[in-house]
Length: 121
Image (cartoon, rainbow, N blue to C red; front, side):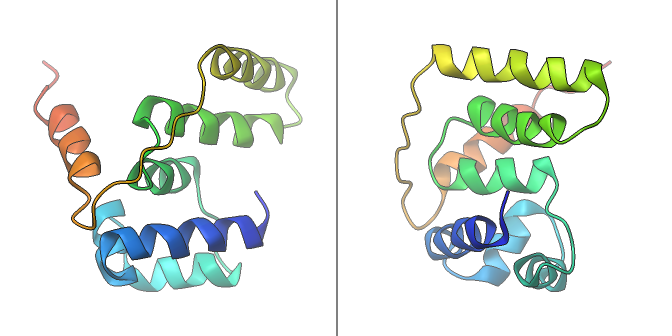
């Protein structure tokens, strides 16, 4: 992902969250790390990029899968490149329907609660 695209994601998600500090809290990262990502000094991994997309209203499963596919297609390993192609094929089968969330980001929080409420044994 290009730095301009990442900055756009961060800016839009920051508006939804209410501030970039609140956005960093939602993403469970330090605010200075978010600033470094905007400056291109720190990479934004698939979890951060997927979280940004989910905050912006994209289905979390789709958001995280798309972010993983972006990372995998940059790999030099043949298996990872094949996995990226598989993810892209799955994503193409389902339309991308962004639904803007309210400023309180309830959609992202409820996704996190669902995930956290299923402890592994």
